[in-house]
Amino acid sequence: MSEIKIAEENSILTITLNRPEKRNALNDALVKSLKEVLREADSNERLRAIVIRGAGKDFCSGADLSALQKIAESDVMENLADAENLLELFSLVRKIKIPVIAAVHGRALAGGCGLATACDLVLATKSARFGYPEVKIGFVAAMVMAILRRNLSEKRAFELVTQGFEFSSDEAEKIGLINRVFDDETFDEDVKKYISVYEKVSRSAVVLSKKLLYQMDGMTFDTALETGAEVNTIARLTEDCQKGIARFLEK
Image (cartoon, helix red, strand yellow):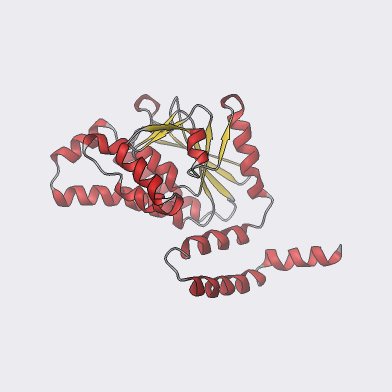
């Protein structure tokens, strides 16, 4: 059984984590396959958005037992290489040109919650559960903290990573960790409708917007404004913008 399943429909690529018997737990093979598919998708100019979801009952339950056993048996440098493997995945999601969207049902825990958090947008069913329980076994939700620190208040991020409790999709939406909560029964259709927006708006404008938004991390206010002006100028010269202005002037 392949660790990943892919399907393309109407310029949207759906990547399904395909280890349902293991609650789509992360292992080396799954992480490697996911990175390969994302890199390939990034070079596909037809695509407007990428959806990541899980097969079976859960989105992703974090590391599997074999991965934990590997951690226990590895030395410092081997563990560093293993951590950097997941770091590379989180970083890659942000570097992909088009939006990467997590569609979460069931549980998204530990590294699985980290994967969802790393995505540009997160959609979830009402019954979905989230959590960073690493602290319960002496682990640290370390790499996802770089993202949480940018998504949430400092105090809320502190609470999530030091108490390790599970929380509902409604709570996740309330604190700004996810974008939308949909009914379980209509989730698939609601996700399709939500993502279909990217089939209608300018691809080049979305690509430039994503890059600029993440570029601004750590910039001073003046530098961010100056960089915005540069991207604004580039956007004006794109084919999409030229055609958009022409259509507007014809009205």
